[in-house]
Amino acid sequence: MTPSPFFAALGGALAATVLATGGCGASLVRADADEQAALFADTVLLASLQEEAGSASPSTRLAEVVAWLEQPDRDFLGFNSDSSWVVGEIGGARVALTSYYLWDDRSFAASRTWGRACVEYVVAEAVTVEEVACPADTPETPGPGAVGWDFR
Image 1 (cartoon, rainbow, N blue to C red):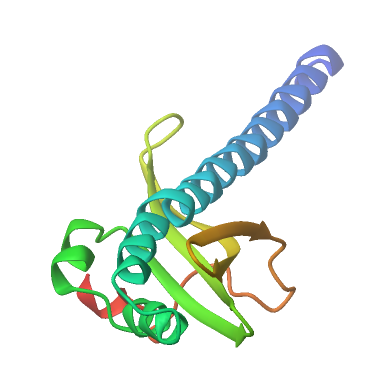
Image 2: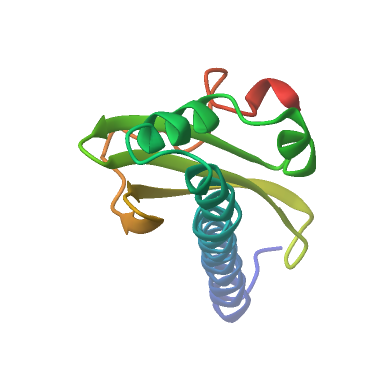
């Protein structure tokens, strides 16, 4: 028995809706994960860098910040085990960084997705942060060389 054209069209429309909704859901989850990665860089990491810079002399401030980014306290990594980052180019008073955050999504289906955000920290009297566009070759997920990667 062949289905009527009405039911065949209805089935096709239903399949298209499910596919479209699934794609949209994945996109929303990725946006939430990216937002969490940016929030981590803008708040948690920034506060730690400001503390590190505050205790350093002006001549060593940038070096102290970079040293902390490359090897933070183990307690910090343990408390922030869903985060990771890669230190990028260092030039002048700027430190490029890619922040990653492992986001637990429970809105559609329980899943974990890496979020990514790119920032530059400006190390002067105080440390400030500027969000920047990620270069095209920036990985979507952290790899084994990322800070905090081996702590998981």
